[in-house]
Structures are given as structure tokens and as C-alpha cells.
Image 1: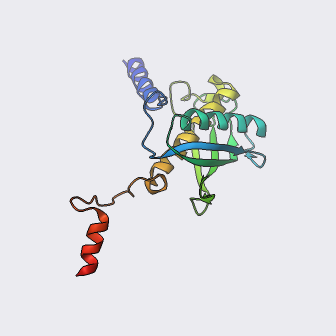
Image 2: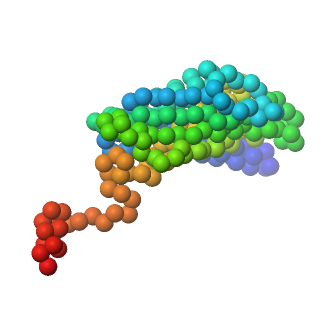
Image 3: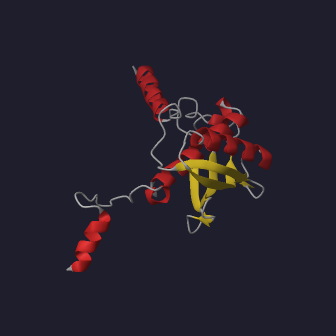
Length: 197
């Protein structure tokens, strides 16, 4: 009975971390990806970690950005810049007792290409972990290669970046979150009527 309960729990956890790239992309208005810039030359490695080179991180993150944001087909170009700040790739450890978790810290910035203007005042930083699934419960260092860990962390980091962009619909020609929708008169007419009072 306990074994069945554990299998059900692990199945549920795996479902929570499913890949959503086959689903239609979230609404980002006029967004289309221009430059996909990733830098990792200053990435700090946590002491208890497998090693990865800046080139490897840059390649993994660029792929994750292309996979997620390459699905958008708007008519205004936005350039995304991401720096890899720090990481830990879990090495093999003692299951459950000493199974370190993998983590990635990145900072993102977004530019409107046509205006040559940075849209966020300061870089937005994200800290992401691997999804908890059946393989990771005992520590991904035992069940995943270094490359698989990097792929999972990059996927989660770029998904977090997409979530951040969705919080700023005004950047993409969409109504600001919570903005009232006007009905009846067009905005110009409504403004003239107000000014005439």
C-alpha cells in the first residue's frame, strides 16, 4: 500500500513539471524574438557542484530561449539578454540523506528593437530549481547527467522569464493588467467630451 502511494505521489510530481512547449504560447501581443544574447563568463559555481563551462551554459540557455520564444510571431522585434549569474549542478550523493539540489540564477533584460530602448529599469533576477519528479526525489546527481541537469534548469529559467514578460502586457501593445475596458465612444471622443465640461 505504501509503495502504491509513493508511485502515485511521484507520478503527480512528474506531471507538475511537464513540458508545455507543445501548447499554444501565452499572449505576448506583438512580440517576436530578435537577438537572443546569453553571457555566462562571470557565472559563479557553488563549491559542491559539477562543473560546466560558460560556453556550455550559453548554448543551453540560448536553446531554451529559442525553443520557448521562437514560437511567437508578432510584428515587433524584442531583444532578450540573459546573464548566467550562478549555478549548482548536483553531484552524486547519498540518496535522500545528502542529495544536493541543482539550482540556477540568471538575470534578464528586454529591449524594444525599433526604439532601441531597454524596457526594464534594472535586470530581473530569477532563481530556479529542477522540477521535483520521480528521478529527483533521490537527487538528480544520481539519475541525470550534467547536460540533462543544465537542460532542465535552462528550461525552467526561460519559463520564469516568460512569466515575467506576461506581467508587463503594456510592453507588447496589450492593455495594462487591470486596465478598464472602455465601451461605447472611442477614446478620442470620450476625452473631448470630458475636456468640454
